[in-house]
Image (tube, rainbow, N blue to C red; front, top):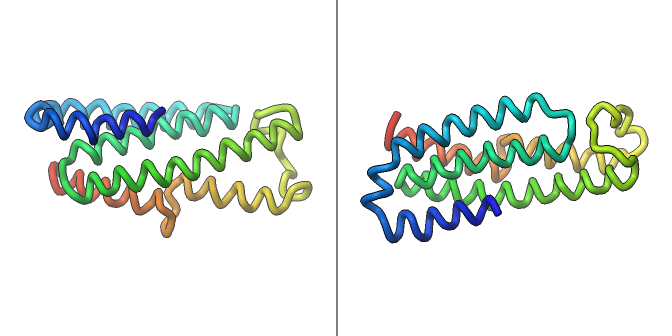
Length: 157
């Protein structure tokens, strides 16, 4: 559903109402920046793995709207890459959390100590997708976030 909002901005807001999009760009930048910061701070306070992924998804979509409303090729390309990469990584993380919940019956982070000893292959895959969700260089999320920032700084440093 989050990616559908980004698609709506790309398809309808920029396509049908380019003057209105340009007029409201400073407001969108402000709201998106505040949304990224607020979602990130809220993510840091969570103990439930599912909520951690959900709040980080809201933060990523704030970056997507910043990239879309930058109205540059780099910003829009970065927003699309970030939506695709985030769809893959967050889907994989939600799947992993589902596996953990079925096995242990809880999603609270502190109950998963020693997971590397009981499920080593799963732990490595989960860490790789977590780092990709964080924007580790050489992952699609990093490339998307980098292009979004380039497009944003081209428009308004």
